[in-house]
Amino acid sequence: MKSLRNICIAVTALLSVVACDSFHTLGSGKSAQGSPYEVLVVCNGREWEGALGESLRTLFATPVPAINQNEPMFSVVRITANDFKGLLPSYRNILKVLCSPSVKECSISARYDVEAVPQVVLTFQGPSQEAMVEYLNKNGESLLQVLEIAERNRTIALAKKRGVKQLEDIIRKQFGISMQVPEGYLLRVESDNFVWASHEYPAASQGFFLYTHPYNGKSSITIEALVAARNNTARRIPGPSDGSYMTTVSRIPNLDDSGYVEFMPEMRVLRINGTDWIELRGLWEVENDFMGGPFVSYTTLDKRSGKLLTLDCYVYSPKFGKRNYLRALEHLVYCIELPQESDTKR
Image 1 (cartoon, rainbow, N blue to C red):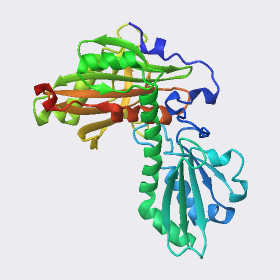
Image 2 (image 1 turned 180 degrees about the horizontal axis):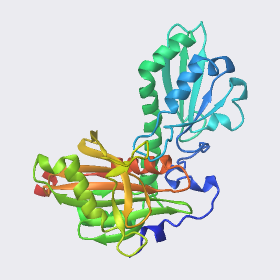
Image 3 (image 1 turned 180 degrees about the vertical axis):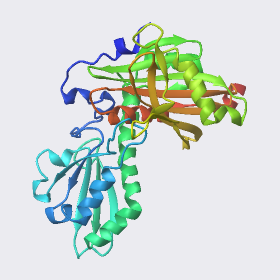
């Protein structure tokens, strides 16, 4: 069985090679420019250097949760309105900022595929910097959500257009579910109730594994129970040395280097495509070796089988940022379609 390090071997590479294939543009017409989770902000100097610009920078710099390094939600490329020409109008994510006394009230509007495909163009306008900062404080999360949904939809569209049919057939056979998998993922291991696949890059790896485990009431869906189920399954993913394997980080160094403190994944419940999923965000490591990174998992109850189904996604990227890899993996749960319980009774 191939080990994590053999699969994820790191070599010197330019930053451009880390761009995820899951974000290639689709459709006809001009292809959108820019990298995943990058937003082009069209804002003149007075506003950008003032309180409004500070608020926008702070908003986009909101840290991605549960990554073992500080990475912003979105990277920002800022230009003035006079420079908004050439290829720049075809950026994938654009935020136009208009501050003018002629504007009666603050608002944010969105248009799609204006100059390229796929593209979202947001316009944020208001009568003054003070009013726009106040509006942004109340509605900033919604702005980020619009951009996040646009990125997610690009992954889903790619998976539907250019999916890995062989892997999708294996998942359907093992779990009885439909899951679109974007191109680039390769099957690593298949066994009863377990599928492990990964997408390898010169300096990083995105991977996911699917598995089922027993459901015995609410005690099966506590953080402790879900972590135990994860560790029991992650042992099947070998590390680089004999006897090493993936596990969940349970403690981290204290800030003052005086020892270790307990560390547990973050947990929340999401409703996705009509199904309730339990999301865990945390860190993984390799027992008896030195590898690790962030993970995010999604667990739901398969009512047909009475078992819990988990999609567990991990990133290994020791040299470069992890945000884009992790975000692309988060989108995979939106590519899953669970048959209804009634389907088995037809």
